[in-house]
Length: 136
Image 1 (spheres, rainbow, N blue to C red):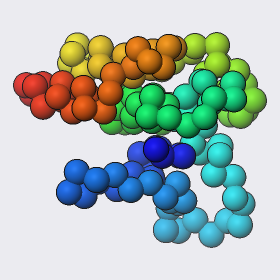
Image 2 (image 1 turned 45 degrees about the vertical axis):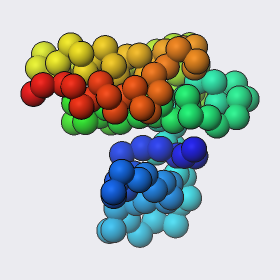
Image 3 (image 1 turned 90 degrees about the vertical axis):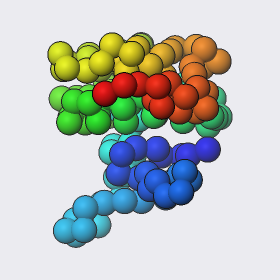
Image 4 (image 1 turned 30 degrees about the horizontal axis):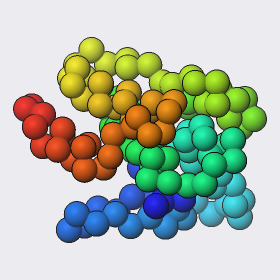
């Protein structure tokens, strides 16, 4: 399980994921350790409610990464206050699919990763199988 799965903390090599959750731009010289503000958009709502990290919460994070890859934007970038962002995530707010060229099967997979009921989210194996069958 990853504690802070986001596009900046994922290294993919030989089908392995390594998550350190500590990545920052090389030119970032700030001493601020506010990494939680960076990863909040990728944290599953059940984690904010006190649930333990799980494979399902990682799948939620993967859905946010998928959204970022298709839009080129960070999820919830317009929300500046962390408390409001957490409340919005708990209340079920998710990013809109804003690009017309996003494949419907990709968008549906991404949305299924955000299912409010963690057991209903696809497994990583399911995600892999679906992605392998997407014809670009």
